[in-house]
Amino acid sequence: MDKIQITGGRKLEGEVSISGAKNAALPLIASSILIEGTCRFNNVPDLMDIKSIKLLLEDLGVTCHSEGRYLEVDGSHIHKIEAEYDLVRKMRASILVLGPLVARFGHAKVSLPGGCAIGARPVNMHLTGLEALGAKISIEHGFIEAKADRLIGNEIYFDTPTVTGTENLLMATVLAKGKSVLRNAAREPEVVCLANALIKMGAKIEGAGTAMIKIEGVDKLHPCDINIIPDRIETGTFMVAAAATGGNILVKDCIPENIGGVINKLKAAGAEMDIFEDSIRVKGKESIKSVDIKTLPYPGFPTDMQAQFMALMSIADGNCVIHESIFENRFMHANELLRMGADISISQGNYAMVKGVEKLQAAPVMASDLRASASLVIAGLIAQGTTVISRVYHMDRGYEFIEKKFAALGADIARIK
Image (cartoon, rainbow, N blue to C red):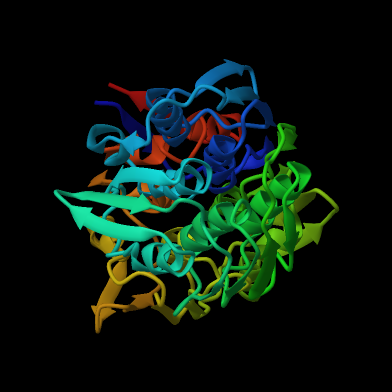
């Protein structure tokens, strides 16, 4: 398997362009199930998760054609409503085909999903939402089966904001009969991107980006061209890397307002920021200040940036507390950072106490999930010596050619066999 090899100690300098957002692309591609015709998506990143959802849709009968950054998806000839285990197990986002299949065909059978082992992330809110819309749900032999002659609009309340739950039920309700309201809905930019795309397809949606989304069902959607927003987590990852290395980089083709939580914490840590319309310049300092963080639903500090920020805090002046309030098992990267000389202790499972050390030491480490892999890359960039990261297939799920982008900024980084 591939590994990433990094010799640390270089300041990052230059410009980097941000790719399309994986977490926006996946629900958008799934939404093509709702339509008889061809949708064209622009700014699609070249990632393993994108390949996985394409394989899943093609197994259902969808036709996918890629050309550069474009992906054409034609859902006219879907002949299957069952998403197989071997295709679904690779990523949890596969559950996003459930809502569209039931909405359009009245029947779906989807394997319980897999993906990164960062917590339970149950799909119960997806299922109770579909039941509220009139679907009959059963779970047998590892498959979720949902049936409904036609979904009927209703009010759905989420116990906690769920991004994929909001997206799944948003896609389900746009073809439901009557009006629906999603309360305590997720407000992430990826949800807004999906809602805007569905509106362009003919859906009637109000309130996306707020905690209450109103939907009036329509009989049919039509094909259209959709632009995928830039990846805010990739944006934040390069910003943190610039601060950690004391570098000076311009992060281009991004949406600064979507990453406000990270910008605020990096400013508090002492990094200099110049914010432009679609770019951010980050200048790191010789000394980084320790700052506490708590992960929260958007617009709070994103859980997908917690691991990268922990790597930064491992060399900061002072002590900080990182409170992971979203996922209960998302500190697995801490053990790998300890191998590199970080001083981290875990308390009560969801608190990490980080005492900054002067320097990290290179070591062989192993990625446990997608964002953990990014934290280890940042740690490798600032460590003394040569770090080798294994299990980088996690990273390939969500970062497009990350080693090439860092190399272009002056990092001593390469993919090895």
